[in-house]
Length: 299
Length: 257
Image 1 (cartoon, rainbow over the protein chains, first blue to last red):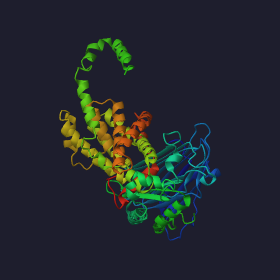
Image 2: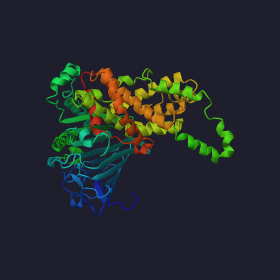
Image 3: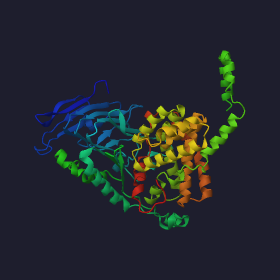
Image 4: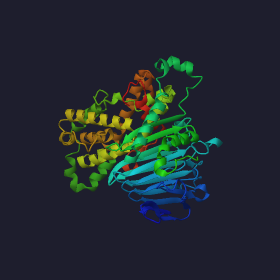
């Protein structure tokens, strides 16, 4: 990202409050910093990241560097899902984010999902540099495409990389790759599911939200999982074949990460975008005191 | 194998000066034989590495009704193998290529950060440490293994993840890097089929038939993902990942993962 970033954001303490001291964006990227997202008493900077045309065309790269200074709070979101349009040749659409989260600072990256259109190629890389007491909320999610129109898992290439480093130590290294033409087509592997989401919660301020979410997810899922009747013998299989047993409409699981367990990641798969919105709304509502507004409240 | 001969002849011609140097390690009778015995032992399911305590997410996939029959099992196995190839083969490959302690520690720490799913992370460390313990006891002639075990036993900085340990051990035993990678795909496939039979999803004979049918796919995936650097490691089965994470939520379960 050394060559000219399309966006630069710096949040620093000015007279004791989190303030946007640098906000630069150039085509095709745009940043809007409304000042009235939350009540004035709440110390958080909100940023909306937009692209012209509501999406990223083939060959375009949107790159952004964000620095959240010590003790500051910032939230980055979008207005609607980010569309990735059909690829021209083998050109990818790219989004890159490099963020530094200072001591006792909080960064919430809470966008709407990525929607890759038919034949789209998309690559995203987000790298976070944190301290041992930084706080990070990261939501990274994507849909099967315009699935209401029958365009399901029809894109050519999707890769999303999320790295979190504590100093020079890798803390969380995640890379999801979906490519058409593998042994098992994306559509077949995803079955009825249309949305894949990941939520990362890291840092001391988010401890109780992590615990809440883990409890919620455990409760939600344990009721959905049960051994197949009669141990799944071939005989019962044959009688059941007529009606294929239903999978849960939303699958979620939480895992702690990091040597000291300061981080937690939730992985979600769901049949519809609305289910994930309500999952996020419900589980991230407790961020309201930090951010001044609940994530995804309006979606 | 046929293509190997012309190459080695050619290199001998080119480096004619080194000829005497090269002749010496050129398979004295016996090395190949003992390597085969070692290879088979490492791949044998009787080696007590605890692989059979794990279902690679199959049990959770069955309890969520994703895998209900043999056809589902085939596509499940293929997804697990694809994910193994894309995510873990780079670690196997890099560890086998430079089987030394410093490189291994780096790989182990990187994999600890990469396996973000607690269920598969624990499965990986328990199988890796068991494999190292067994290998260090069995292959007493390989001093590097004893040293490694002595140096890092009880160390907090390493977790003994399975893929790098497997690559390291096979590298030290003398597997070539292609065989190591194929072997890793094989043991993964072997363990999933074993879990499937014990979950009563498929009979032992049908499992063997299916294993043979899936082998060409496994080979294709191995060829596709082999010899990659760990920087390229990616997971390709996000749905399975979310499902496997549910393993701990199941009220009754047979396997550890």
